[in-house]
Length: 162
Image (cartoon, rainbow, N blue to C red; front, top):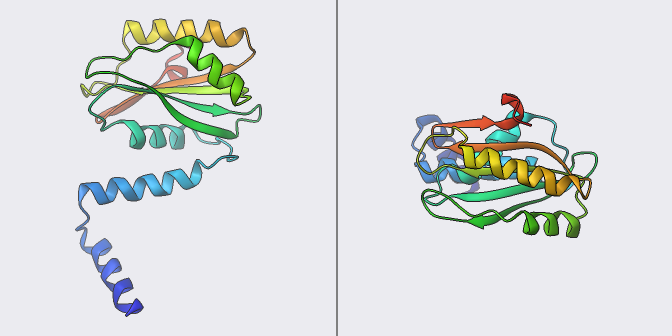
């Protein structure tokens, strides 16, 4: 029977009959293996893929952080703030508390735009500056702020915003 189940799985892959939810679940499993605690972030593209899979299809805005050690190894990925369709309130104090608790040396911010447009807003740039100022006081570096939507991904670092 194990062979039959394996054959069924293989034919499902070949015929392309995965549902959208099955594809998302499989992508999450693969990317989470790369983003286990202690894994080093070696590829900006993989980081953007991970964040997009985690956040892009959410119906409300979610602000998350990838907390890293000084060698850019993952300590933890956390969804910290949940909002509405059009925004979420981000509190620098809470981000600083989590960074201290986790003994992070660096952080990558990420949030989604449920509207489908990944272009950073003025508010996105403003909160990033506030977070940068707050985290600088405790010597935690911001490596990037990634904005995702179902249609695309924008990196603050790639745009020269950081």
